[in-house]
Amino acid sequence: MRIVIIGNSKIAADCLEFVFQDNDHELVGVLFEPKKNPSPAVLIDAISNYQIPFLEINGSVNGELYLQFLQELQPDWILNINCYQYLKSSLLEIPTFGVINFHNGPLPKYGGVNISSWPIINGEKKHGVTWHLVNAGIDTGDILSQSLFEISEDITAAQLMAKCIQEGILLFQRDWKGWVSGDIKAHAQLGERTYYSKKDFAPNNGLLDWNQNAEKLHALVRGLHLFPYPNDFAYAHFYFQGQKYWVIATQIIRIDSGEKPGTILERHEKYCLIQCSSGGLQLKMIAPEFGKPMKWSAFYELMEMNSVNILV
Image (cartoon, rainbow, N blue to C red; front, side, top):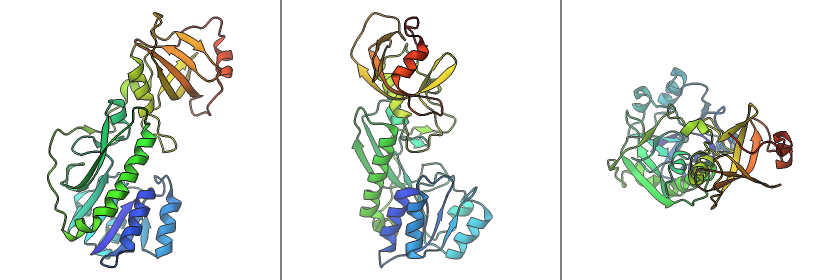
């Protein structure tokens, strides 16, 4: 089988290695997005080592330049791995047998984008990854392989993203030859479908509302913690004296002081404890918008701590 990879980052590089080293199939080309790739060097090194024909994607992968490149390669299969562009019918029709996509969610639940954030925000205890065929819809194609796993109560979106990549690589290594040979048959997606688009904004657009309970706010902070990956979704934050502060890390404290939500219960050199509608939330790390994490002592000086008791 002649195989082309459209993809980015470590997962694409690792899958490239598995395909290239297999004697029964031929990796004939790679396309990747240098501007959106969080670690282009990993993929570029793999492409260079094996002298694989490649093309950098700048703009839409459905552009004439990239369609012509793919047509000339005459692939039997295209593997779409960490390239989050919508593939139009003009591209889907090029490979002999079809396009296989990696999705970092347990389809049919959690289709769409920001799928390492929403399960945490929604309080899910389990998550998963899916390899599936691509059709005209978005994340609606038949499933080839899927892996489900439990997630910890303190996991961040960045950690969940890394876990999904790890699980996706393991699943690919185990099953990819079965997919392209036809030994593993695809099956329709079953169950309730949930889908998130770029128009689905984070709750309160990431603004922490102290009138909510500590569990929900802690989940929101973790669900919006994507560092070191790019964050084009939202940042958990609050405002003080007109300045936005990003909240990077928090911890739930089982306490009900009877004070008004937003009241500062404790000023500590390593955290600031805030009363929520139920429970307290330790703000363990904050940063001015687009700035570096700051020491709490510096923030307390800004607060004029003898006169400011409530965050809004």
